Amino acid sequence: MKRAGFLLLVVVPVLVAAVAYFLVPERQARADSERAGLAAPAKKELAQQIVASAENSTLDWRQAYGYVEDIGDGQGYTAGVIGFCTGTHDLLTLVESYTRRHPDNGLARYLPALRKVDGSDSHEGLDPGFPAAWRHEATVPAFRAAQDSERDRVYFDPAVRQARHDGLGTLGQFVYYDAMVMHGPGTGDYGFYGLRQRALREARPPSQGGDETAYLNTFLDVRRAAMRSRDAHRDTTRIDTAQRVFLREGNLGLDTPLVWKVYGETYRIP
Image (cartoon, rainbow, N blue to C red; front, top):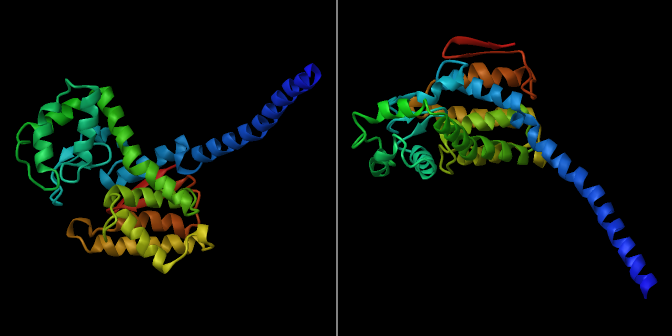
């Protein structure tokens, strides 16, 4: 009995070690995969720069933390690093989350008004002080970090995750991300997931055996048509002279150097 017990004690650690031997590389491979593509730090930085060229006409995306303006698109104030809007719930969610961690922040007093105008273009309860309060709070490192975190949670991470599921590489992941930023994660005709469903009815993604370039062209066609249907978004240069350029060049890895145009202005990343 002692001998059998001794053997069991020996065998169990060996089995555990064997399982760990195979599982650890698997976990490591999964982690490496998650850091690859657009989620790799250098590519993620590149993605923010390209989006900023279309959203704020600059490559310096960090200067947008304090940006706040009503651009007349029916979504109230657009603000911050990724264009959170008072009319589309994401700005309210950001300020609520930030206030839970930092209750004495300068935006907390606007929460009742933000809840009231959510879903509309109204400024009721926000004027005249909200823009100045936003710009001031954007000088606080914790609020800039909160903007980054909410951007990733709502837009970047879901877009990259969906693109990977569809078998898309780095450029495809960016195409999804830029669409998620502009259209939001909605399932309607103008939302990101609605656009994706329309593209899937016309072309197969790589995960279903389709050609990546053909599928991305179809997705961009669908998105372009949606943008042209809205007066506020009728300028489609972020597709025509940027993303489509990368696709025509066969740059599915979104590798530098990059040259593109948005609104007629040329941008370069060496």
